[in-house]
Image 1 (cartoon, rainbow, N blue to C red):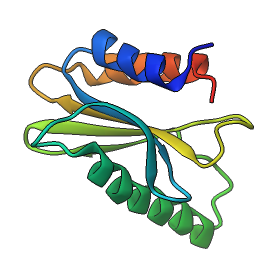
Image 2 (cartoon, rainbow, N blue to C red):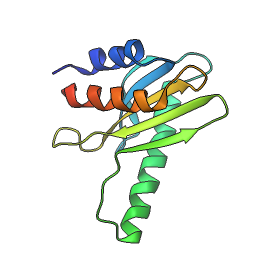
Image 3 (cartoon, rainbow, N blue to C red):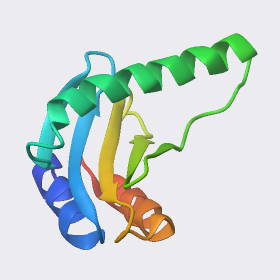
Image 4 (cartoon, one colour):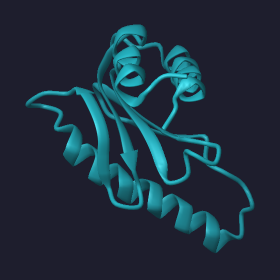
Length: 124
């Protein structure tokens, strides 16, 4: 099991094209940990904004009567991928991993695979 800081650093080093990563509490919109980012990618703003995305999707699923769970949400921009992975398990309720990728350098399938592996080793 790894802690938040170690898991986020691993995301940045093991996922090709990673620009920034965060662990976010979507009940409050607060980032519990961040790594990377910069002037063009404010991870605290991204955490709050992506909280709205997660809440909207969960609300829509409820209105549709879908008895299912979200694995991840992908937002594609012209130069970036934004990947949101909801944490599973009793300790992960209300949390998601957020990863921003450079779409020219990233392999999206591998990024999803690596983020799932990191999620499985994360101890919150």
